[in-house]
Image (cartoon, helix red, strand yellow):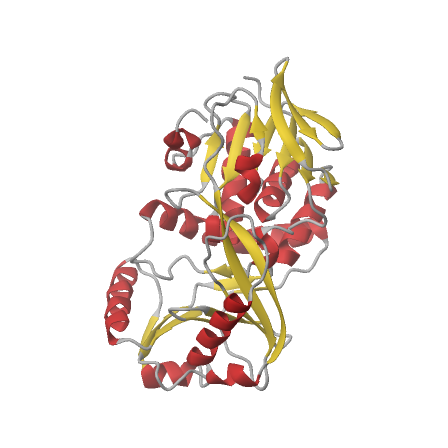
Length: 374
């Protein structure tokens, strides 16, 4: 197949916008289409933007772990390039994460994780409860210890998505909002994307529609991409007093401190179908978990809650790679809780494959063929 020059990206979340930007900056003509407006109104708008591949490193799928670490290494240059091309400021910090526990059993696990990461040459700190509270004085007295990973950080997912959209437009990409994609069909060698506002035609299509990727009909495929939505609720509170120094990660929640005095508390994991509501139960559970970890959260002002539907595959790996039936259709979906972290690498893998015919070995593990003839 000739290398495509006109590409339609379906989905304007952080993954879709990152892919569109990378394709456009390499010279492709790109259209990005999404049923919502503005960009990033799906799972992205309820993401805390934590960049922490080494958290729970003992439990992670090794392929996913390797992808996440690769993508984290891209982040500094990725942010610098996007901000330069877009002219949009993006809040981004690499102040580390402190994973803490109130359990001796979990502390033993953290020691094992620390030993493995130190063997890989990763700088870190392993603390007992007193030392952990010296690092973060607001921690509960029940904390028995923690693991500090200085390489971690966080980014404003919403700001980054808007900056990516602006950067893509600066390279000629066209953003089409408020157009719901219904069907993708091959016609005379091109792919036609049918929307409720009319068709879009390209040499190729990137399907990056998150939890909705499996809801779009693809003519000629016997089955849809197996993605299910997993609801995540996120709280925003106004912190009082000196801020936390970094992301605090506990067994039931995490806390992300912004320099404007706000604190993000996340996130629930709920099998709720396509229900995007915030719930009393979700808010209560997160507040209880946050206050158990950092009791001063009880005095914080409550600003609000958001919910997003994370796209999960059956094996918790993203689905990135070409269709086995329509070679000029490429999937970039199924990132579950790692869409923000994996956005730079996903964009690179997609652009390398589509524009340079350079197939990264990672696509062998992430390709759709593991789920059949998609």
